[in-house]
Length: 386
Image (cartoon, rainbow, N blue to C red; front, side, top):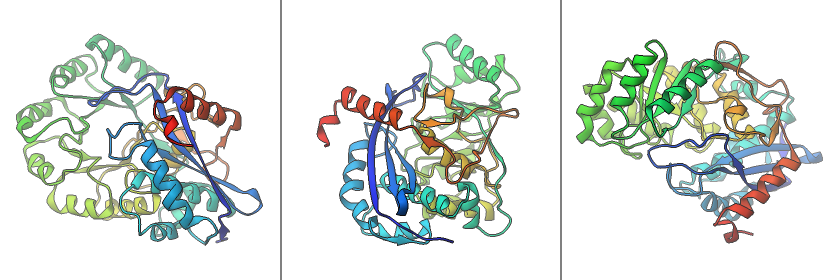
């Protein structure tokens, strides 16, 4: 494998308007915000990564501005000037920086893309090259769609019908206390046979166990992260009382966390978000844990732009990712995105991998600049960075 010397790293803070707001149990934001990482090697070869974050510390503790500070002032100095043979070398270079998984993931993703391009490989094939034999990627990934909380049941049902008509084969609905049983019952009455899961985003406690148990009657694929965002133990107390599998999300931030969760029986399915666990190197370790334990696995999303979406799609094409992932078509989120070509839903609720090297999509410089201007114009925190 060819090595690459990192010559320069540029950061672009962007804000993209969403086609539809995605309301969860902790609210909604009008724009998709992110830090786009541009890593430049010899001869101007460029790798792209995405630090997918919100402006508020809602999903996790990091925000766009905290990630900017850590990335610019602590992580980039460790990378620039270094010659790398593999992106798996990057986590050790960041060992003096604790936490800040999203910031680390965005930089590491750019290095994965850069080195894949240097070696003339699609990112999915480059991931497989870092796994044992037998992990060649598929040419497409099975995907589903996530639907936020709507104002009325009628609006919710209409949006589900719209997504089914578009060809999505798995529906994920956001829930919260008071917007759960009635919702699930109405959906099952209208759509008795769809593949359905519910995502609580940590909105419940063990005191809600009976309410969560009542969801068993609706033949759900899973309930995602019902309890606290940083909890594993109480999920292990809840799971034995439910027939429906618990899927863990926010509380798994490393392979170590997932080993604990498996040992305790805290969940039967994993939503792996590479940005949440610090990048694709850690994700590959978690992937192998799921493979060894025959644990159902899918790749979650953070409303990524085409840059982060392309990398997640490459990972979702690996064979042990055996449930539909939250990587919907570009038109579900952005019009336009900052990359070309767009991702389109194919028959069988799939999205095909791009054919080019690395992430396989191209950042559009004019759109990137517009998204940066939008961040500066519309975000109240923009003056805090320069």
